[in-house]
Length: 75
Image 1 (tube, one colour):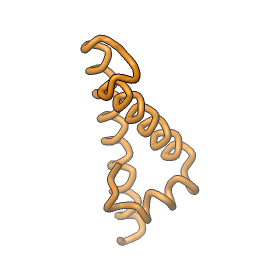
Image 2 (cartoon, helix red, strand yellow):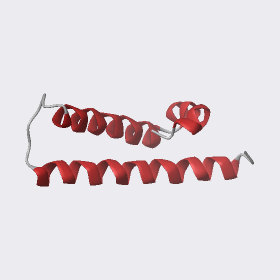
Image 3 (tube, rainbow, N blue to C red):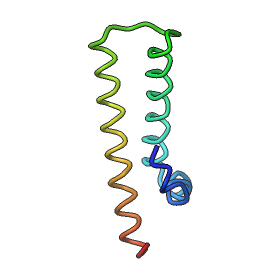
Image 4 (cartoon, rainbow, N blue to C red):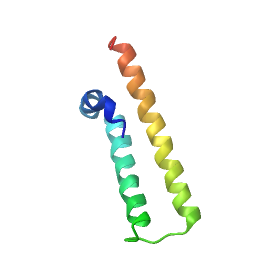
């Protein structure tokens, strides 16, 4: 997720517990979606779509926190 901000993400995961939680949950959802897509797990299309929407919401929230961090630190 947001690989171009790898350094900032590393700092935020240490400095901001909320960001770390969002990042972890995003990765968990990403793995679950991959497992469904590759046939290791099964769920309805509706449930899969809900997971994808939740993952995107978390990514948007993490991105907003990254942008705020960059602004606060003049990066």
